[in-house]
Amino acid sequence: MNTSHYFNLHTSGLGYLNRIREVAPKKGDPFLCCDIAALRGEAGNAEHTWFDCRVSGKDAQTLVRRCIDACEQKRKVLIQFRLGDLYADTFVYARGERKGETGVSLKAHLLHIGLIKIDGEEVYRAGREAEPQPAPAEPQPEPTPQF
Image (cartoon, rainbow, N blue to C red; front, side):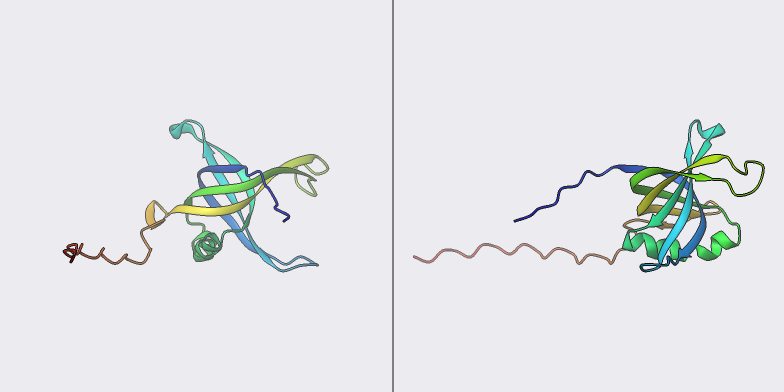
């Protein structure tokens, strides 16, 4: 039996969702991508670290698609996220002040979204939209053994 083993690198945080888009490669199936401007540092003076993400989790894909209109309207879409398979990719700027310079892009797979706030209003929290669970059945008394 051939069993594959993997090492998982997960990154979690809070950040702003941007640039949601469908990518159609020349070979292979189209896939959903987005950018996340992750917050780091002191809350009153936070800095951003940008991640270019392929949206991989099925629930994450549904949730990101629900945010397309808000992002296109330039509303602030804040998410709590978990990324996997983070790696750095280099590129050369094609235009602008940095044309010809080498840049670095942090790439990852967006696996999970735990919270979404749009313009400060919570619109999703993991676990709250789940189907209500049926109440547990009342315990039944044990039958008296007959000898």
